[in-house]
Length: 152
Image (cartoon, rainbow, N blue to C red; front, side, top):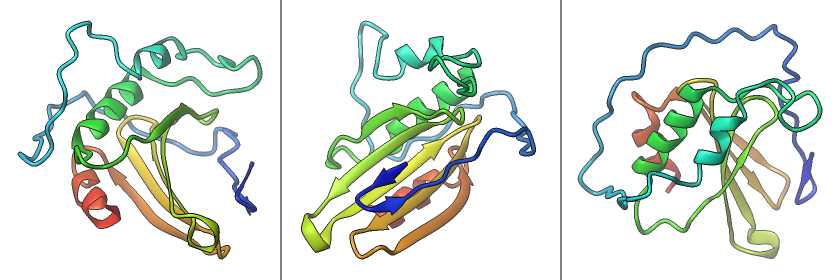
């Protein structure tokens, strides 16, 4: 995939990666992050609950687990209210991606957070100059709040 002239490669889903999932545990949400209540129970992640089968995209997409959907919800609760809304989309590698585009021209920056499988979070920034910064892997429950503060 090419974004702003950057070539992005994603895992092929060859099965060589192994991820361990654990039972969901509640996370503590800092006071400065205030989620908006949703009385209907449906949110931007509800659709992804049906993507739990291989090939949900009509091709070779990996399933998006219920745990990944829940952890994407948890991550969204950690985002500061004043942060502009992310573009959220399912990934063919079984992830749910959050993407923010800021600046323009030579100052364009794309910030991406991918959640999944499970509560794994990987962040990276793509700059219009061609540089990429990878922030490594963390977990929604243990490191995402600090990562979000670093990014935003």
